[in-house]
Image (tube, rainbow, N blue to C red; front, side):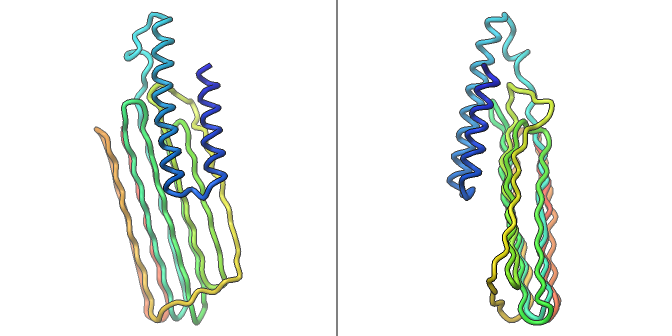
Length: 226
């Protein structure tokens, strides 16, 4: 019964995310659904343990721990260039589950000269029971943008030998041209948080701009709780 409830709810969340634009509102709704599912798993596990005459808190619960690495890069080559990296990531521990939520966007554009732009993003999660992520890359005539978003959950009263992952990746090509202001600009912005008793948060961010030639931005972040 418990496995059917979990499968149905996870499937519902996956369909909701895949049919949406992964806006902040939708992500908050998915987290709320997962939080309520965590509470329901705890109640059903407690009921089962009572029937089996087991100590619920000694036998039923498992340690929740999530490790997440997320990051990427943006590069532009040309006379006037811009590269940007923006990353937001948070891991939170609650009574019945741990949640990881992250979003990273990398953009690049070049005008004049080579007019080359390239972006890339990645996200790896370890220790979660379920992982939902979405990566979208859009390429224009002189620009490119990649965005990756991820939601991961590790339930305290559930132990999966292998995490179940839903990770669609989409690519689009459009015939649009972005004007770039004079100069060469590279920026990196991040906000990384880990809220739990034992935490780790480590971020590397780098930017480089070369006059009339190049802009590059990158961020790599690692977060862990356990």
